[in-house]
Length: 91
Image 1 (cartoon, rainbow, N blue to C red):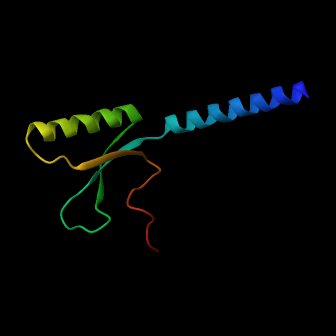
Image 2: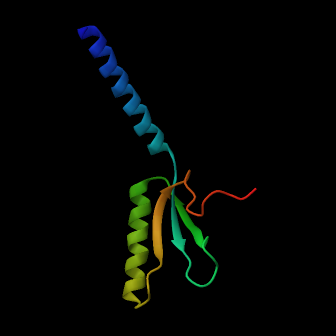
Image 3: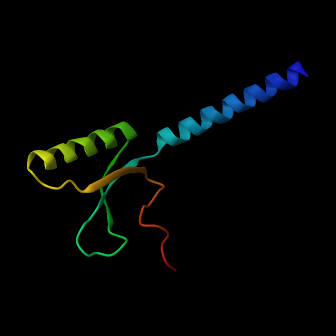
């Protein structure tokens, strides 16, 4: 019974390690929601970064620049390159 618990624990650790590695390998895309009558799918990709932290830092910088210039900051979000906030493509 103890050996089965050890094997299960090892399997869980290996599974979690592989998930962490997979998410670290993907790129992160900074998306901005364009205000101005382009319809409900007005999300546009701005740039891509290798790491989530880099994407979020760039997002914060762009929001700060907009604030300093007295402009309304666009709605922005960082998503893995596997996620498209515009939704599924029509066939």
